[in-house]
Length: 80
Image (cartoon, rainbow, N blue to C red; front, side, top):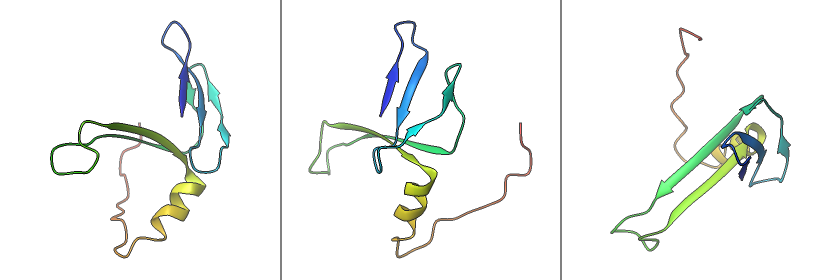
């Protein structure tokens, strides 16, 4: 869950899984987070809905540990 200031700068990110408030400084999240934005379409029971949520790194790890097929992971060679 994200909250923004009136000027559009990111103010708060809260993990939708565990409720942890993530560290945000100067509008930048300063720890691991995955943000999902899904616009559901015609062939789903959620047609016309848009879902947004954020998960901290621990909740993400718990979530993907339940997958029957593991997530593809590759090492990023260049870090900016």
